[in-house]
Image (cartoon, rainbow, N blue to C red):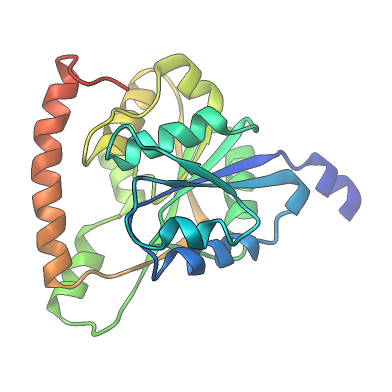
Length: 238
């Protein structure tokens, strides 16, 4: 098979990123997506603004990407659901506004799904450091350990996730909660008989959080746990 044949075999991919008040980093994220080594005519980039009040939406619209808005719910999962609704391709790739995908992220993630015949796959998250103090090291050791979480809990986060759209058609979209909706959804997919794989060569870089951000995360996860309970009893469904 020559290079042209390989390109023709590549599926279209819709990249979906939610964002809220991240004017300092959203441009860097979009730059990294535009620099992917995947054919540009076989990918679309959907950035979903979730009621930002800073210059985030203005910055997004200065780039050649699809700008969407989720204004009903303040939830990154509602924003992702808005992107899923709009996506034109059957293969979806998720990452976050504070991540920086490696230039081969898309191609490696697509190849991993093809090789493993998995229905969805989480890639590798590599932490970067500013101070490399105790808080940042703790964050990198304890969070976003995708390989271990897949093996032990059969769940994965949307910081680096590739999904066939048919799964959303069959089990529904992400629950609209503040935190943990991706873990709930991927576990539901696994329990529904879909194969969850690990794409170790599909890499995104994620900044390690300092103590302030770790405390904010703990608070968000705590509120999210209550939201998850409400979701389980049928309140505020997506």
